[in-house]
Length: 249
Image (cartoon, one colour):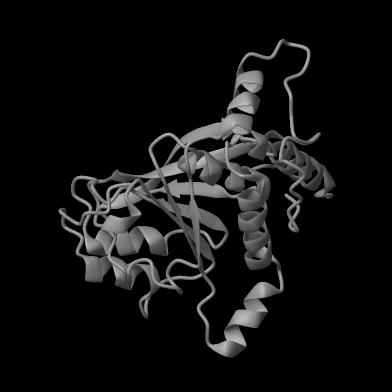
């Protein structure tokens, strides 16, 4: 695209670009982009494809114990702080963070992933290890193409019956050639079925257990779903249960 204007000054073009930038930022302020791998006919095999852009989900809509919400948010705050990478490097520690969300189906594992992405204004890149045609090399390429600030989620079925071996997956996650600056979120209904090497400290830094809703969580869920148009009940004014991220959007 070529933009031109009459005269010797470039100020009209700069003003236009500044307006577009501010407009785009305001439009995406309360939304979360979701990207998934898409096969191509080219050499790369798979590329990231923008599949959806959803309204950011408030933390208050996730039926999880308040203390657990605060715990994972404090951990995410610490990792995404602008000075954190400077702490990792001198100590020879790879700058990455891994979470394991586990529990019965429908208890909010995926919902919490999207809520965290909304709070911190980052995109979500979803990968299922059971995707047809996905190999270790294409998985490594996909992760290499991720931007520095992003959350990537692994599929719920981690049984390695496809073309990706356990050793290959471990190497992609934190091998010598693995990239840094991401948050890896793994979700599963059966954590006891996972290999211990996959969830050891360093690969999974924090585990969050999701249980069936207790009475108070059920009450809040009911009121939120069947509230009138006046205003549904919330735990805080911003809908994030009083959680304040260190990093602004």
